[in-house]
Length: 310
Length: 218
Image (cartoon, rainbow over all chains, first blue to last red; front, side, top):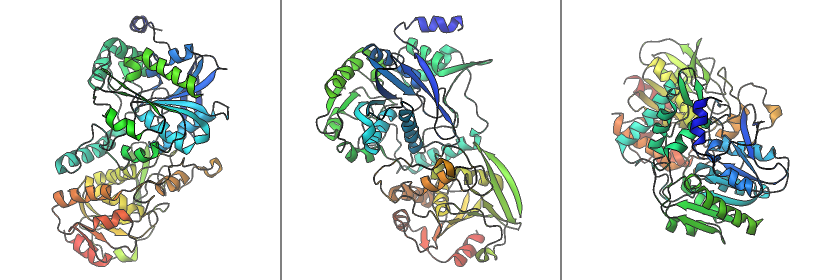
């Protein structure tokens, strides 16, 4: 490992790279699966958010591993060390999650935890595979009736025209595109625009695990053909009536400081739609990345919740 | 028939020129699981301009990708790649191709010279509202790399098509295309998304021959 990477990582001594990694075939492409903790311990599956990767669990996952869990995470297709795919959809990501659970070689139901998009995915996984899920922990991925916080007003003709043509223009170029190369500091500064509450030390650490070092600089390991939008047919609010139907122990955690990457769901919106008996925490002075801003506290309530539930 | 291939995102798309001509082109978009016709359909014999037909990703002579993940938006971008090559065109869409054509028209309202929606496989998709979510699966033994891709058949027969999503695109067509009649519904099928579009004055029910005549003179 290069000295530069050592220096960056040494500023975050609590962050730990996974203990093991392997690859899982998800039907013609492979995803990268990583694990922290003893292989014989109780498994828990972690699902990251959109445009993130499994390395974003490096602060949080070791805390669960220390409490006796086998923490399993994967890079979603096109993210991190997983293969880039020809095509991307929510449904394909759901299938990939099921393949990762299958790879654990246990038929016992397991707890699942997801952040943001990953939280939405785990909500749905508990509905489509209820026999494989023993508990759901949702970190700032609880829907609301207003859709995504960064969604444009679709009745604004000019705004929608810009979004639709912008998406198609991106696709016309996407085959030849490469992510922009930069220094570790440069990539971290760019990411801070979307993650303004996260420390520079953490963002630079993320570069060392979520980007690769090419001859001309560092590039995020995220498929350049992927892009937000067009806002699409799928609506987060479709999940609202389904949440109440889940019959597994449920822990919901949201941040209360609104952020660009977040869903903007308020505590008043979130609590009433959770499954009966759900445990719910709205964290003061915390943004969308609850597990990165407050890893110890989120790990503590997660472990306590699982202690009561499993 | 002349076939050329376009490199688009991760697909190699087959575009067939069924016949050259003078005037703006007609682009045929096939239905779910189909491929481009090898001969000119009888109903378009009178078209004066060149006639093209696209094989969508996973269909006909185009790339059959691995691991699924199909969306109508991705197919819309396939058709957009053809527009980039042949310039503004009238679209004739069968089933799934009709819905994809509507999305494309709403996204490129000044580059489409009318859309005709015909009956065909995949007109409905998975309906207008979500039903029970499920993991869409395909048997590994069916995946031999040949077209049509079983993933396309499974995923595009179950994708949700909310009426408001279709009418968002129609609003763009109405506001930006400059056409009084822009979309002709020449099919019998009336999925929810299509019925909703008929509330716009730029979407009319008519027959394909009259529609082709109208659009050819634009």
